[in-house]
Length: 120
Image 1 (cartoon, helix red, strand yellow):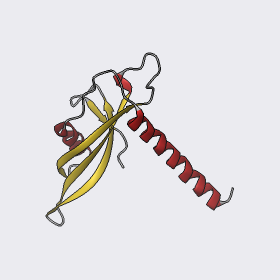
Image 2 (cartoon, helix red, strand yellow):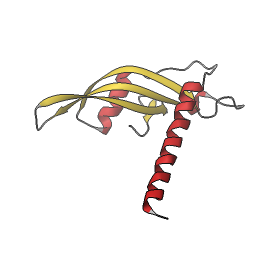
Image 3 (cartoon, rainbow, N blue to C red):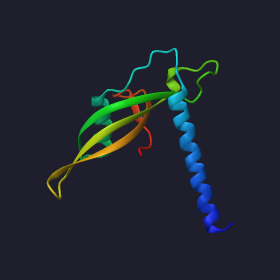
Image 4 (cartoon, rainbow, N blue to C red):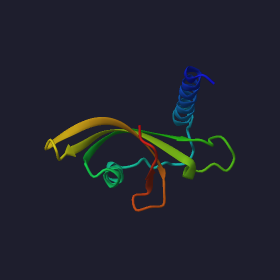
């Protein structure tokens, strides 16, 4: 398989996967009351992964369920996509930096009640 074709196929798979996830996040409305993550919980999770995170501003969270519409679906399968502004402190420059990020998470039986998934 030629390299350009292989690269294009990988990009198409990534694009399709992203569209499927977004479709579930935007197109799913459930009957179960969902609890949206709080900024404090997100800050705690992000700081545990990256000690330079000092503050966040939670802009919005959207929820979707990969199994919406199927019998027996519950909120334990919900996925949350949150847009946040993350402030990190760089020790080398002695300065804070802000960055817009999208964070994916799901409910989890932990101290915060959430588990971080891969960030973008």
